[in-house]
Length: 158
Ligand code: COA
Image (cartoon, rainbow, N blue to C red; front, side):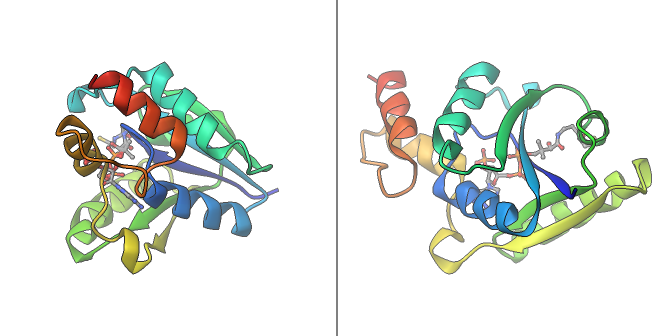
């Protein structure tokens, strides 16, 4: 059984994340969306809210489940018995950071492999902070995030 973790802060989850999760779910037997506490990023949604929005957005994917985690990603991956970390690569600017993270995680746990999925062009520019900024300024975000996320953002910035 090949089990992967797709990690992120998901503040909030976007269609870009969903693209990576959906494609990972086609490659793997099971995918666990690992929602990181990421206290250093001071997320606008609580850990439980971010996990709930990720659950609502992935409910249609039978082999995907969502779990929040605190601490190191490799410890979480070990705890859920995952052998693979799947990350999205959007642009060349992501590469250096992702290269560093993949190398660090390999150093921490050699049994866990990092695999990258290229984002399609329509999601190359997308990030959670862009979506938060649009919502904060009252711009519609429906083309960037699933409906439950758009509603949660509207409530947050009402
Ligand atoms: N589509 C759309 N947006 C994407 C994306 C995609 N495919 N991939 C990434 N992004 C966005 C994210 O939403 C995030 O946006 P933001 O910074 O505007 O909020 C940004 O790109 C950066 O993404 P990422 O590098 O995946 O950061 P993250 O904060 O979402 O997740 C963790 C980082 C959680 C994977 C990483 O910090 C981690 O592993 N934390 C656990 C602690 C640990 O083990 N640290 C390493 C050792 S010190």
